Length: 521
Image (cartoon, rainbow, N blue to C red; front, side):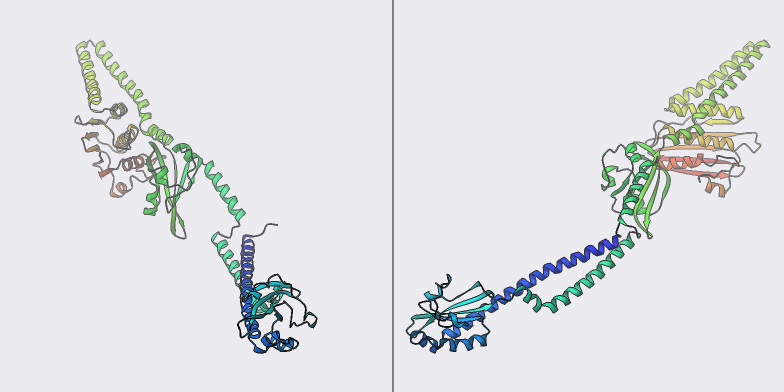
């Protein structure tokens, strides 16, 4: 039968109280017996001295010892002694409570010092139990020892001591057990209430289930308490962070200093879908404070490797555009070949040659510019594909020839810039979908120096109102009524925040939109 925690704790504390009382009783009884012994020693000495200093006792020991017992016995009764024995120097008993013992020689081994004028007490076992004895020499007026007085007092037995203290013992024990039991029951109830009325085996089962649940999750999970000690570190997190050892109980800064999980304890607010650089990994993290009764007691981070998310984002904005660029360029080159073939068939060979030079010069100039000023091939390829795509859509996409891009801000790479530039240009393309405008222009500029990297994308499309501008970076919000929209600019906002940058939007309906992104290097 499995006992409840409350019953176990009550029984344990009740036992501890009872055992403590038992030990305390032993100490009290021992002190009582020791005090009794000291008291009886003093009484025995007083009785022996009283008898030894009586003048008639001295005379009768030296001259006539017949009536000594008649003098000593009343004194013994008055003093409550077990016995009072008077002996002469021949060790002959001259008085004794038992008449049969008078006149007999005492052969005690511990009497020798008394016959050498020593006064002392000792403890000996007699027929009635343990006896406290005192030995006092009898000295005459000439200062000569003529005998010895021995007084004995019985020590009370253990049962007698218990009986003499029974009221005190029962009262103290009863009160201690009652209040101890009541306190144990109240303490157990309080502890069980704080443990949500769960029994230890239930808590153990929940702990095992929780641990296995966290380990079964595909995402990494790390939790800390308010002292920044690690309380949860699941199996997936260990694999992602390459942490083989047991880290529960250690400080989060000692294990992974760049999780930014402790800042949640200060913010006291959750942070969702935030990209972080942790141990050179690009992860997508949700960090949430742990609250109990409205008090923050810790924080938990749920995160995943952003490789899969990045692949999806690149497919939506950059990678797919490279593939479509081949189709666009193929279509563009076919049109150019048809133009050249038509001019040749018409006999306009000079115009055909001039057209070839013109097209090749434009393409060569753009390619050389990108190669010289944009040091990342992924960004150059993206811009080339967007230029071709713009021509196909009847849009003029101009790249500022003073643009420069040599390196990326901290925590960002070419994947992030593909997402930023690709999304901004695609949004500019979309701004012309539902409007008629003869001149469609998109202007792109990138400037970089020792301290600042800025990106500008400007169009003269449909523009946005103030409400749309305020919500444009919200996940799921879009000005286009299509599915799977409202993701691109949300990703752009996250990347800019990850790189500690700023993003500004200026837009006016039927005039156009300008995006300016600034990173401080």
